Amino acid sequence: MHRILFATLTSFLIFGSGYTQSITEAKTVMDRVSQKLQSYKSLKIEFTFTLENEDEPVNDSMEGSLLLAGNKYRLNVMGILALCDGEALWTVNDELKEVNVMNPDENELFNPSDIFSLYDKKFTYQPVSSTPERAIIDLIPAEKEDSYTKIRLEILKAKDQIEEVTYFSTDGNLYIITIDSLTANVPADERKFTFESKDFPGLKVFDLR
Image (cartoon, rainbow, N blue to C red; front, side, top):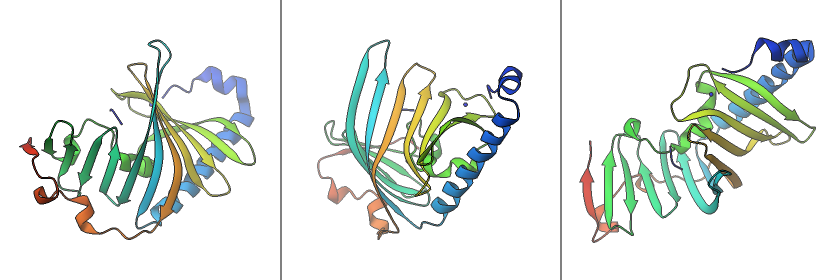
C-alpha cells in the first residue's frame, strides 16, 4: 500500500518489426482492459498485498479488501481502514486509536483507484511476455516518477481483467497486489466511503487539511 521511458534504440534494433507488433498487441490488450473497467459503476475486490525486497530480505503478505466507485473507495489492509468520498480521505488506525483526515490528492500512500485508471496516465507499453491465456506488460511512465520506475501488469486475456499489479519502487521494494476475486457493479452505499465518529468511538481525529 505504501507509496516508469527506458525503451532504447538498442531494444528496437534487436527486436525489429516483431517488437513493434508486440507493442501493438500490448496496447490492444490494454485498451480492452481499460474499456471494460470504465464500464463498471463499482467494484468489490478481495486481494493479497505483498511486500518483497531481496536485499533485506523481506517477503510479507497480507489480505485486503476494496470497494471502489469512481474516485470513492473503502480500502482495508495492513490494519488501516482508508475511507475516501472523493473530497476527503480518512485513514483509521484502530491500534493507535486515531484518525487522520487529509485531501485525497495529498495522500502519499498507495491510491487503489490508480490501478483502474492507468489508461489516463502517460505510459509507454513494454511487452514482457504473452501466451494465449495471459499477457504481462510493463508500463513505463513518460515522465520520471519519484516513487516507482515501472508498473507491471499481469492480464487474463479471456476476461480482459488485471490479475496482478507490481509496483517497482525506487527504494528497491516490490509492492505486489494480487486480485483474488473481483465483483463488478455491486451496491455501493455512499455511507461506506465517509467517516462517522459514532461508528468509531474512542478514536482521536487529526485534521491535516
